[in-house]
Image (cartoon, rainbow, N blue to C red):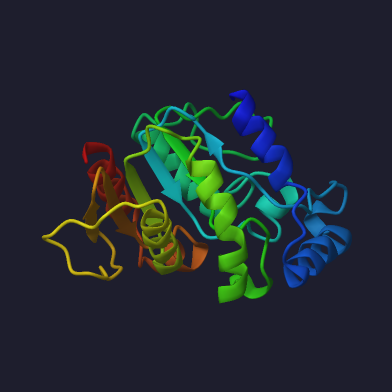
Length: 227
């Protein structure tokens, strides 16, 4: 990791801008889930991670209460991450198909993962105000992933957050796309020097019900890689 990114990450993990999220993340870290009662929870904001030279950025939503909020890394230590990293491994973007902790040896190549909300929200539902307060961190972090050109947005919130980020940094939408592209699995929006690909979120709710299958997700990852 380069020095500027490391310094930004040090700022992010100390953020206390959203009182509701601070209370919830710290409550979860104190009370814990029974199966993790012997572990020390992270209980702070999470940063992005991966290859800072990446062309592809995967945009999630927020850390899970007993996933990223426990381990300190988004999609690490929960079923969503199991599904995501298995797919990235199949695509040759990850050196292993699973991730259980920050120091488990996972390495990503050509992909960076980030979330528009950095703290675990109650019921996995950040408020509009919390998205807005956190947008500063998204803009600052992606500014330090200079080769980013393709964004794989996991879910409607990630799709909207990505479009808003691109608008804030001055990317203009292509003439062949409607002014406000609608989210959908496999949807594509083209901007100046940027492409956004939509996917259903890799949540357990989607993967266990069959709304999002391995084949479906592999297809959108491939689409993003080839964009």
